[in-house]
Image (cartoon, rainbow over all chains, first blue to last red; front, side, top):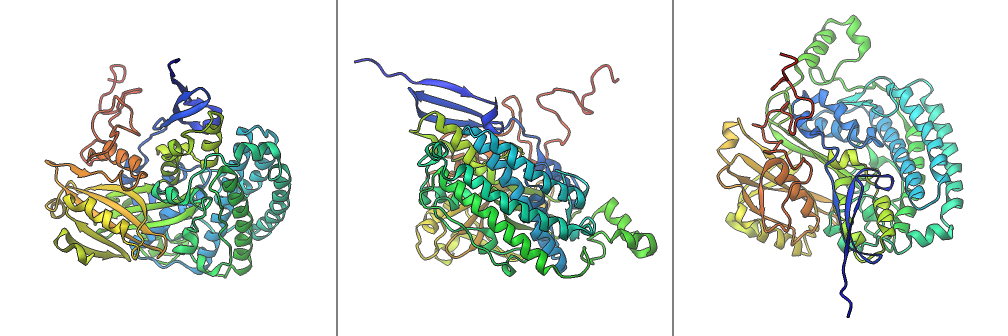
Length: 390
Length: 163
């Protein structure tokens, strides 16, 4: 009898289907994957260490640079965690604006995912379409924070500036466009036989396994577990919004595709509700000594200027204790675990990175499958290596 | 948590986050009981992390490193934290990979960045930092600007040209 030998193949780190610098060591028996082991860390920049060395409010720009496809979600998670630590009450208008922006961010991230996942599987044109629509969202980012990707628009205690004057109009026209385009995407992929063949029953994970592997977000919901932080532990006023949490049945790549597509529709609805119900009010909380006073006040009020100067140079002192704030980012549950120690710098900032933890299940998704399914498994996990490695 | 008696050293609540400090040697037993209890339904190990309390005398007395297990019940939408204190001379705690396969990478990360050894982990190797890097970067005594391995040099060791 012939001896059976396995071949070890190195995939990446520079490989277009790994969405960044991810290396996968694949052990193959013919075309079948015996073992797939992801190797990460190529983008490690010590973001947590950097954040621990900075004043609370100066650590904020680091959060944009982790999951660079969902900057506003990361900003929101960090700000909510610091606000929880400092026990700050946020004005209603800010909450609604944040929800609207967080949902636009979900769209942004899912659009990039949809384009890249489709291109991984051979549908080249999707990327062009989704990037065309993403551009509209980036325009809104630019109008708000002045930047297209590293926005840092959501700040501790509120927003960086007032929302732009034509925010409402711009977002509404964007919602209209994307709602139509979502339909177009579906005609391209949902009933596409090649796409179905590449994703149906591929990279399957059962509900029990998904929980045991600590998966969250669309990865977990694709397997039929209805866990969404927005519904389970509402933050930033999500309890006021009416939306559905889509779930899958089989837990394969196709189910996750359907879940993400439906999530985009729900995001459009939430963003619309946020615009409809947006109350009037200040764009930043009034908490002297902790939240920066509005720029207009600094020019005319002595106290505001003093507080501004003090916060910029010295920051604020946080009480001793640890808080954890989870939010539903496009990739899953992103959580910020912040430990204050009575000084003006955090003792510990831990980011619970959904990409990193979801990626850990890749060996489980690939084992026993064909080699070409590894690409599909990585794509449907939806990772951003900036967040995996931090 | 009462059922575990003297294994629970401390119980605290801060800003609505509930945490229990437990004895390190009882960790696996407690987690197994929590996971198996259908009433509690604690199935999701959300995260594992660590806090280095170097320089804070009051906290250091309890043990310099605080390993934090973030547990969540999907059925009851309830989160709480288990904390284990470890001292520098004995940085060992048992691994939870047998209970939660997802703990694998989280424990590797804590090992890599803090140097906590998880006993029973199948492959406790570096995950984020380069192989050449010595030490554990997230410890408070690891210098912020020290570059390892050195690509560009930095202010701790300026190259000859700068001098």
